[in-house]
Length: 314
Image (cartoon, rainbow, N blue to C red; front, side, top):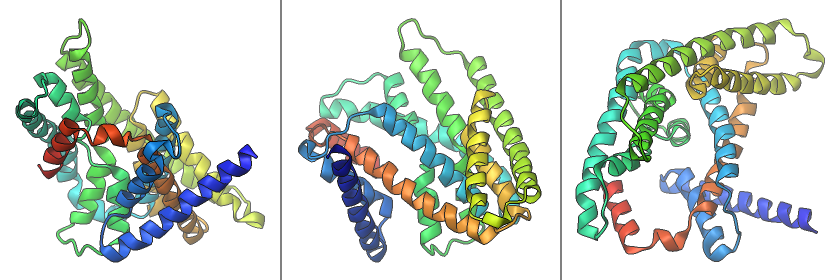
């Protein structure tokens, strides 16, 4: 009965998450926040025991691939072009400034709560929070009419889809400093960042064009539903091959989706509907798992609770 129990629990989690999403829409709150809360609720006191960080990372990788690809497909290139320069600045300098400001605040706040933190460790904590969460940004902007003007929506989407390389470099450099015998290598960090950005952007555009060519040349109109499977395979090819080539896979998959969404492809509406539904499913699963992996007892400890609230308010 193990398989049946697993399906029952999974169905229960999805059902409650959908109801939470409906409530969030009426309240004007981010639905993903309530998905996270549902996961924490079911994980409280090990009602559902889950502690595999590796599996959570794997699910997160798949979810982000689909979320960014779908977000790219829904974005018009004519909206991105005017905000290209400020978007790149926000995704690089903006991430660094966020890490420095939050890290400094954390360093000076920690002693007030009886916690001893070194500046590199405070900066490392801040670096992990310095890039905006793509899933949240795309979900909120796609489901809510925010009334944003002056190209703010495409600017936020571009920044969210391209800020991971800088945050990644900050985390790697600071981890190296904290590791025993680690040292700060600015030159190597800058080189790694440039390589990831250039290869990611280049291969993303290339794989996007190849995907469009494949969709237009292959003839599977006798079973049009297979186009969704084919596009899904192309998306995962884009991420995995770019990562293997030492590029940033998330940037590549966003640009590939942007290319596919702005060129002529068969069954465009059907493909967008499929990816939109699949995106919602993966968002729900990802945030449920993140909620399940949270240890609520540790979260409610004095130092963690008040430091988290303080950083959140900042």
